[in-house]
Length: 286
Image 1 (tube, one colour):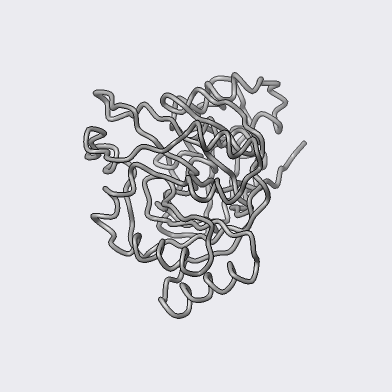
Image 2 (cartoon, helix red, strand yellow):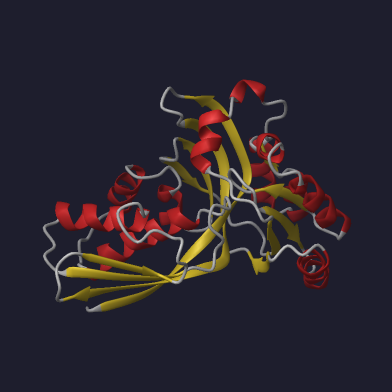
């Protein structure tokens, strides 16, 4: 095999709870994560020249060892004595620094791609262990569908898929640094925690309305203090017929779940063309 063309899917957080914080600014999470049909395109191929060459369509995305994809490929090359050069091309569509796991899912896709391209025969457990060394979201991004994710991202329990629905994603024109949020966020200030067990019950029942009503992210208040548009976007989504709306990850992307395409399209267009929020998308759950 010479080349792979892969999709690298974004994620949203149906719930995100922080149970504690460690000295190194890592969190003890309990969250339910969901992939959506919104992806970057990644091509990985062997090349005669040694080393790693990374290319992206966005000039501000690093293409050296500051990039997670570069880091994981470099690690795999070294650990498994791969002499071939590697060329990776990433066509970015997922907004950067948005809480949608763009960098993490790219790295996870690179891990899966390297495993296939070089027939490394790594198990799912080995792939997750490898990804965990670089980022807490990578282990989930290696998986598919709806999952309960606990600890520092390494304990993953697959759940029943939620009913297929439409998702409006809306990222305000602000950059939120996950590293800075993790540094400054204090779990002691959390006022409302997600009802994670009730959410799992709603997922098992296939009750999309209940799922929408239970969306909750404990980091939302902190990020909202830096990006006041979050509250307004949520209100616009709910007023437009969303079953529920919440922030994904550390933000600042807000998502709304819809069981009606026309309502979702109308809200997406309103946010994009009336509120002038350029990075607004209409996708579906996977």
